[in-house]
Image (tube, rainbow, N blue to C red; front, top):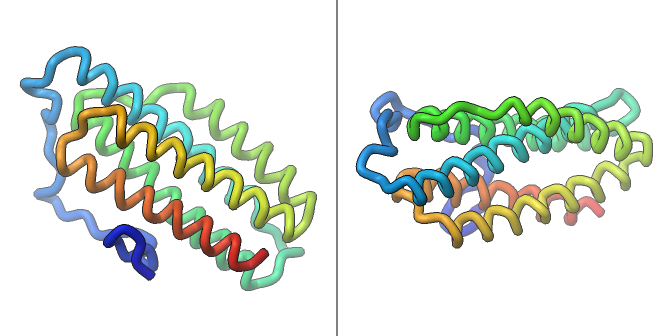
Length: 171
């Protein structure tokens, strides 16, 4: 399935060695870099939360098909975490220790939704991914991205739209 020109059936896109470009911050003014840093940290933290939501939804009481969808979504979110961690390093930044707080929030959301059963799991997926899409829209619009980074963010956003479609299709 394609969304915005991106094949969202590919859970983990290939990254080649020459695509990693250290020193992306060179020549950028401080205000632009500050916005990029804040946005990349937000993406990284929120993707950590989303991956943990899915991680803690997996259980033997779910149907095999539901667990398969949760695992695929978790794997995809883990790829997003890697995308944003790489971008942080390329721009000369580091992940925030706040990511651990976001992981705990994700754990709580995941356990809570799992306790509400399969409908609760699907509803949480729609809610989390809808919030993600809105956040992606805001940060894609408000930050001046370089083209390579913009493409990574747009692909990850297309994945989030795909998650919403998958979870809504199962409701």
